[in-house]
Image (cartoon, rainbow, N blue to C red; front, side, top):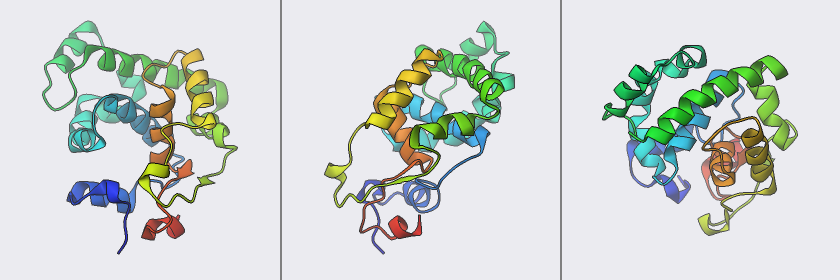
Amino acid sequence: MNRCSWCGSSKLMIDYHDKEWGVPLHNDKKLFEFLILEGAQAGLTWQTILNRRENYRKAFDNFDPKKMTRYTQKDISSLLKDAGIIRNRLKIEATISNAKKFLEIQKEFGSFDKYIWQFVNHKTIKNKFKSLNDIPASTKESEAMSEELKKQGFRFVGPTICYAFMQAVGMVNDHLAGCFRYNEL
């Protein structure tokens, strides 16, 4: 079975590749989770974040933005001591701030899904890359998303992070053309 080579031999990465990555996602809570995890990945590998995803879910109340908006300095101090997540003050504070912005977007647009999928005209962009080297770090769509999210007050949402988010939630199909998942999606 041909897979995208980036998943390597880790069972966790293979399962993620085979079952989640690139599957169009329209659940607000899951979209929020991926936006937060992609921001946490900045400067790190996805394997590092994926290994800690369950810890992130526990630490951030299963990515419940309403609960997260009530976090205090005491909660932040506790998170900074949590070895199960990336203990970076800027990323932790951005996660909490992004929860507030996420709720504002939901209120204004009816759902985060409706808002975020507008950057790809509400349908998956199906690329046909043959090599990992062909996949861009960002695109005009991820740059537009990044610019708009920043205007809304989101943090850790640069164009590269936005493109990784778009790949993860199926806004783009970047499975390599020879990968078994490419045609399935």
